[in-house]
Length: 126
Image (cartoon, rainbow, N blue to C red; front, side):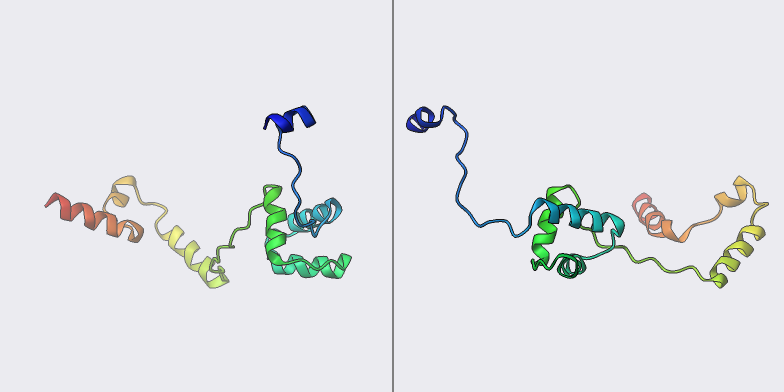
């Protein structure tokens, strides 16, 4: 370390030899721009877009690394069921049916999403 300080005047690491980046700053900006336009695109789709637009071939892992460097982290899209007109109509009918219920009426209802919790607490209390 002593010799390096006298040669460079600094304790910082010297640049290391390594493989050159397969993308340049312009390509990285393009990836970010395309990603922000449609956040649902996969890294494979972004890679093929880059090949079509600029003729640059990179791996999907490289796309993920470049986006991660900028703070864009990939997530899997959660699939939600599509509400049909029938679902909406049933929901509206249900809401109209029970709109006049009071707080006391609702206190006697066990909701299905709380069923396991209620049963668990009941078993512990017995």
